Image: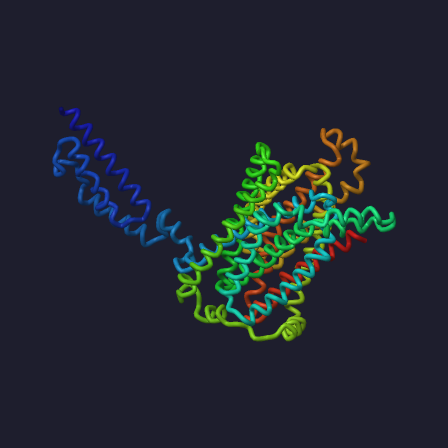
Length: 524
């Protein structure tokens, strides 16, 4: 009995001291009082009265209390330091739904980007060579027309109405394409007429086969354009326009690079989703497995779009009405309809050197990435002519892009903090130049590298695919993590008119001439 009683005393003392030390390290001033809380239940379990349990000496109790209070008044323990690093509740209430919106927008965009390439590159009578023509003769007019339409919408409706209406339109189109347009593509496409024209073309006009392929597969061309517009309209124009409206410059420097952390996790998950759907096609017994896969892919896009609309409505009701989250002046701007006409807006923007410089950045990036990307996709189709294999590779490509971008986002925070905006903005063009030079060197001087290719146990074609994929991953990850946040920060100091219509002109019209310029360079 004596040994058992001694064992209980020792056990209780150790338990009390461990709990007291843990709470003391966490910076709680009342550690000693809290430490006695579990004693009574444990005493009852051993059939003892709580009063019989060991107590700490009064002098030692006072000493521990004073030390705990001193720790609380000083730097604090680990929990206090963690709480200090968290955003204030008002900022957290705002940036959390914004980050979630960006996640689901990019989740949908990654699926659309991979699907549009599969459709147009593997379509009958088509290939990667039609992409420059699509960007020049379809995307560019579509972007210009949309900018005019968006300017009219901004004059007639509030930001909330424009955001909701445009995202709903995109969701409706992609759902309609998967369930109605694609299953009836054979009846909608003028395949026989275009085949007759191609057969009658003289050899000197063989270059017209690519534009004719766009006419042959016109519904795919429309899908391609709408998918491109999702990136420039929903991502760049609607989301970033709304984020800039409700975010201060100081907040943007802290949180814009972090938005990409969650958003590029979306690249990983969307890539995995595309690969999962590709795996289902392999075991499908349907006459057209791709049609079933397209429904699943567009179902994911529509679901993500609905979540974006729900988050946007939540912010309108819970965040925009909270003065601690959004200043009343920003709320007033978001509900104000701009009053300048289209011609006045164009003249106003043309007179702004600030907007012109931003447009030049976007146009030059579009030209550079398009020149490299189209060349790579031509090699990619040669390596993966089957739509299933092509889609599966693009899914893996998107997942890798997301993983690398996560690392670049973490590095981007340090670059912004220690080197500033200018150094961060220079990373993307530098990356494009270096990786693009390596890729084109492999294509131009591939013959002299044949011994090296053979030693690596691969083929020149597959090596070009892998190097091109690495080039695209590094270029796009630097764009997502540094170029885009730099560009969006540059809009914040502008007034409401420049933010709305200047951003539309730069992101929608500015992006299309860049892609068209790259396509024209390839045609030459």
